[in-house]
Image (cartoon, rainbow, N blue to C red):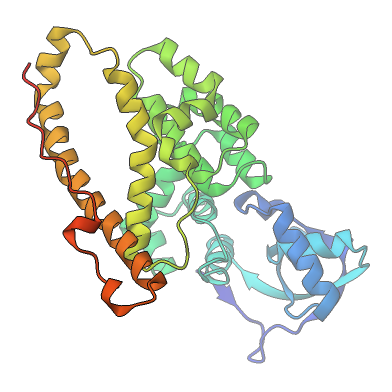
Length: 335
């Protein structure tokens, strides 16, 4: 099973009219417009560097590898293109398609899954497929399970470039009946992959249908409410990695703090406060330590600035009298 050559020299590339090439095997690939544009630029600059791999089936030349090259050449109105014809059986076609696209950025996980499913349709077991493609059976099983759980319409969205494979994968955890509904919201709001993952998580955690509807009605507002730190500015690249992490944490505190104060003013019901007391006490103790640490860091900044602008060495240091003393720790309020 696989490929057989008519001569030891291998297939001889030849030029054929673009119109003679069939693309029925494209059903297992996801060719997106940006990829075709990059290929068009490459063909314009360097010409065709690699022949399109084809196989003869029922009197037609079927493309096995080179769909982007064919699409770009068609856009450039090339009359012909160079192909390399191989003799392959049904399983050999799919194995070759996988083998020629083993690079880290050559093929998406969904494309791998679509190809493996075609091999199952052709009668191969998952164990046999694993042997043919040189992978562990679990690798095959995970990918086939992925495409089986994805709504067929979303598979077509990815294939035609309406949605990225990464975004579609984030929707797989949803029930099949809800994938299209959420996908439409994701597309309309132009959400990225990470935002889609966060939206799906919010939807799944919503306890009531009306809350889920509200999340989908205003997805960006729902994400901002659930993750206010996402809107903060990026960390300063001049900082060390440790200080970048600190800056990010400070931004999160600054974003979450107002929400906590809003929840405490006015105070919750007495029965709620009783339940919340362990959390309130824990946060109170943490804030006391945080206040001391932030105060120390602020005083260090002021002392450093004072030393840098001082004209005499005697005034270069900071004495306890030069800095305000920290207020004594406050005891947690009794409840």
